[in-house]
Length: 92
Image 1: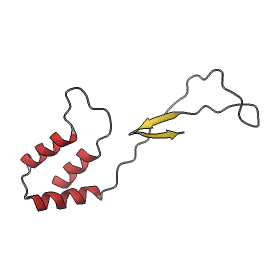
Image 2: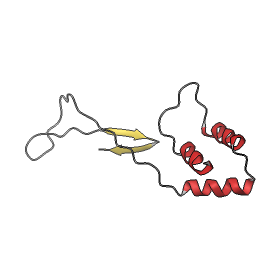
Image 3: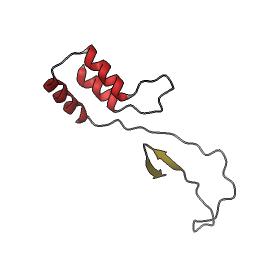
Image 4: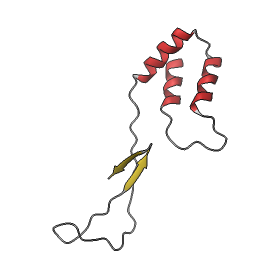
């Protein structure tokens, strides 16, 4: 239970709301809820770090694109998306 809870805290995805608690406060609560000695806490944290992070898929539909420069050999242009997720810039 501790490993799964720790994994969930460390792999939270999204934007916390104004009343949300951060990962440190959630970890402190977990330690109160499931009291373990420090060596077991560290062992379980390491186990949770070896579980692969989840993969997220975001579906985007372009409704309208105007004034695109022709960039393809056929004189057309494919729209693209610039996205910022967890401070990593990605271009799709």
